[in-house]
Image 1 (cartoon, rainbow, N blue to C red):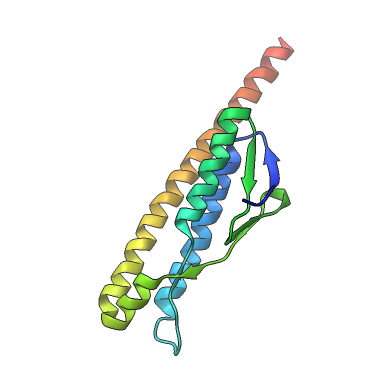
Image 2 (tube, one colour):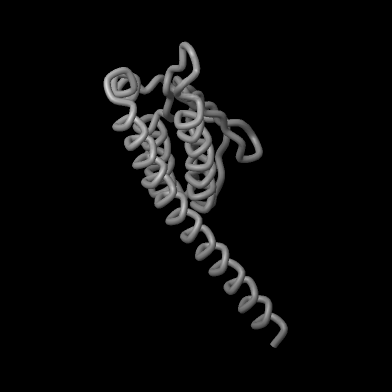
Amino acid sequence: MKPHLQATDNITEVLRRIVDYTEQRRDVLTRNIFDYHQDNFCPKDMPEAEFAQRMTEAVSEHLCSQRLMFCDSDHIQFQSGGVFEIQPVMDTQAKELLRDNVREYLKLQVDKLSENLMNNRIAADLLRHQQQQQYHSAYLCGKAEKN
């Protein structure tokens, strides 16, 4: 495991990265649908297990030490300022399906997009809820200080 590139004290950062991840994955999956007919096309997807492992490790670190540490992996590199890059990987299952049955290939891509959209909405809703709680806590604390 490569050393961390960013540490922070807020679990909100995990939700932000999940939202970013699902937005990047949406773009990759959409390209799989629109570009499949091009010569030498190879369907790709995001490294889901690798991303999940990075987030699990960050949450575990948060639970143990009250801080988040995001560690790089083969296809994921974290940078300062909350930015991270993910390199899509070849989707061998989709590649075989595309070769054998285009209709099933397209159905698989739509199913993945649907699942990804659901994950995005859940993370975005949790992030909104977290930010509202922080706002209300800050508002109530500020109001109490004035009294």
